Image (cartoon, rainbow, N blue to C red):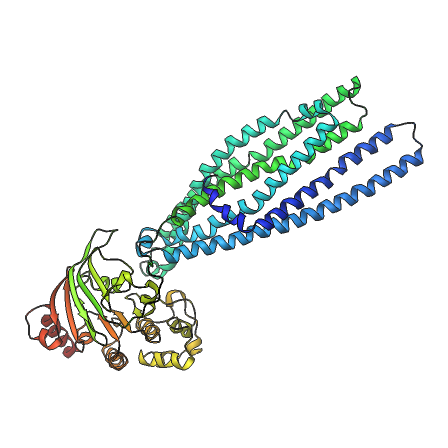
Amino acid sequence: MKELQYLNKYFIKYKYRFLLGIIITIVAQFFTLYTPKLVGDSIKALENSKLDASVVRSLLLENIILILTTTLIAGFLTFLMRQTLIVMSRHVEFDLKNEVFQQYERLSQNFYKKNRTGDLMNRISEDVGKVRQYVGPAVMYSINTIIRFAVVTVQMYIISPKLTLYSLLPLPFLAYSIFKISSEINKRSTLYQQNLSRLSTFTQEMFSGIRVIKAYSIENEKQEDFIKLSQDSKNKNMQLAKVNALFGPLMILLIGASNLVVIYVGGMMYINGSIPDIGVIAQFILYINMLTWPVASLGWVSSMVQEAEASQKRINEFLKIEPEIQNTVPEKTEIEGEVAFEDVTFVYEDTNIKALNNVSFRIKKGETLAILGKTGSGKSTILSLISRLYDVNEGAVKIDHRNIDTLNLFDVRNNIGFVPQDAFLFSDSIKNNIKFGNEEATDEEVIEAAKKAVVHKNIVKFKNQYDTILGERGITLSGGQKQRVSIARALIKNAPILLLDDCLSAVDTETEEAILSNLMEFCKDKTTIIVSHRVSSAKNADQIIILDDGKIIQQGTHNQLVNQEGYYKDLYFKQLSEKELQ
């Protein structure tokens, strides 16, 4: 139960609902006590030969009416109990899912490199669902069981202490059995949930990469892999189900044993005159059967608690993780746009690769910097550090002459328009994808941003134009169209810093020149950094740096670098000759 202690704050938050549910449960149990007593009185009346038949008939009719009334009241109170406690569990589920999602948003890039999407999805859905079962049904039936057991056993003890003791003899065996089976359920439930995460991860990856699977015609191989994972999941679920299945028969066996004890011992006591009438035996049998469901539910409740414990442990594993990148400055920060790197060295924690090595440069507000270099030279890492997706190992990244970690994190990111190398679009309309950069933007501003990104003409050709719903990850659009919609999304933000990470790689030369021409006009008062493999994207920049293996090997303007021997000059003439051949 140690892991489930994390949920105590929610019980405190909803304490009034929780206490009301307990009160209703107590009242309901007192009404259920009347039925056995009335049945016992009825049998006693039938046994009493001194009473007149009409008196007995009247008494039986009265008892039947009382039984129906108390049963209906107890049933209604039970309904209110469920409405109170189960609804509370839904509120807790809502809060916990939001807490998990907020933690997902807070966690840094390294976390997502180490964890798979399918596993994270499983924790926020399956695991939270298991926890809700504990907060709702498990807690409700536990309260119901404890109260009913206390009320019924006290009533039984008042009637006959000796018969009560005998009838409850099987319960210690029940408690021991529950303990042993529950520990086994905990282990098997953990294994099942872990396997379910692997299955979710595999399925998510297959759906995301379905085009590659079809292109390589490996559907049969992936089907076999899925069957193996599904079979493993089925086996672990069956192992869990087999243990869970022990509870029901075990409960019925022990309750049946209690009934036999009541009949035998009660019968002998009646013969010996220890109990006044046969109706007491009937009362005890009803009381024992009233304990049947609460006692039987112990197994089910124990199973739910153990599964919830395993699930909450998986949730707690990352809820307790402190994000590497944290906002330590609550005050609002004004951003002008000047960016500087001072002897920056950065090593990726997960791979131990040194992406940048002693890199220094400065861009004034309104200037444009172009970064070129081979794949893996550290170009995208520079943009990630400016957005503070990572923190540097050595040196300093500065914005407006201040270390980036002394600025409000959210103000820094809100003042950056970023177009990533992987043009990610959401399963929403084209308009909403563009407005993602500025949710308050008007339709006119959306269209203007699309025109600057040279994608407006493509959009209006769609049947629903800007209201066209995109498939997952923007699959409806071509690679070049996705890149241009991503550019429009960054432009509509109108931020003082604009970061473009090789975002023109999928467009033709003519479209690239049109976009760059629009960007030159748009970015006159903005600090712009363009990462590219093309000289055409870099030649108009105020500064150009060439990276190789995380180091700056060349730095200057287009005219300076094209007249120097080195990477830039070779790339320029190579791409110039390729263009002439086209």
